[in-house]
Length: 108
Length: 121
Picture (cartoon, chains in turn purple, cyan):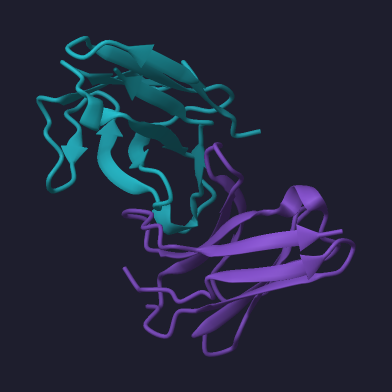
């Protein structure tokens, strides 16, 4: 499975958009980009995933660069409840491998 | 949709006892479930893959006789920690491969339970 690189932490003001970057330069053609988040003491929550097209759902948007070597998760209007660890994972259908993720702190 | 329920949420027990944790997919059938373990301030580590009707596949370093996995139905997998000791204290989390969306397993999100915090005294 391809490795991902994420910043260890980010801060965001409440009500503003949170843009979380992820590098996955070794991604293969059949691997999807997945985003999960984990709020303290809970199981990970699925957010969104995509292959090469940009994706949007009720939680977030996923922007994947044309060369697929990086992506950005966008939370359009961050709230305090969005404070969590966000994991970007490249997945080929075999195993989900969790890295350290990005700690997002939303501040009022 | 795609809800995974895990029970119990917290267990405290004495050293030497066995503890069973249940993982259920509530609104979909899951032929494959996964068990993870998470120690404080660390990320999730996959322990084993559980396939309905067959033996689980364990990751390297995970003792299969210590962590018994049963996946007897399409909606239930159980993890039994046998003869638990303090070093087995951890946060155990299950996931289930969700409904098929087409184009292979890589397009099939895993959905997670809320975890079981196991404390062995």
